[in-house]
Length: 195
View 1 (cartoon, rainbow, N blue to C red):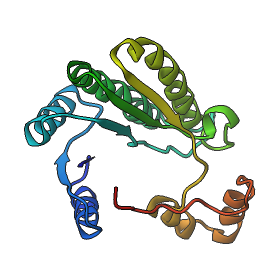
View 2: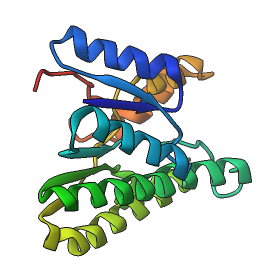
View 3: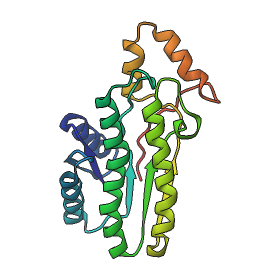
View 4: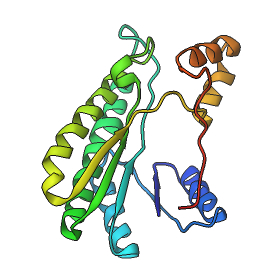
């Protein structure tokens, strides 16, 4: 397995955690919004493993802000990672999978794509684009035996969400708001399992 992240520390930690759980992993640092970084990541993956069977496009920027106060910098970074990064990574990996003859591409979307969120307008828009991209890619790549799917989960209790709650001026209210969005009144819990 290959772990990619823009920051070295988190990426290395994730790869080490996978190894601790009995898996095999390497870490390749890179910014998926940069074509050269994506090309390097795909090339190193193929050099190491000889092929790419599954791509999971999980990188995302969650910009907090309404339509009236989201900065241009937040707009640009959110679209660069969430849309351009997903597109570039899929583009390079699809070429590799086509040459192999079979493979899977999974985009991690969000319920925000169809439901929207009060203070996540640009994030919701970007995830709507990922959903549309998934549908088009599935049609374009079916002749190459490449399945393309999108998983649209609700709020997950990640480190980022935890930190956002803790840094809030009213942590209990923010946590209650997150829980109210979930049909089961609980946040999803990330786990690592041995494949």
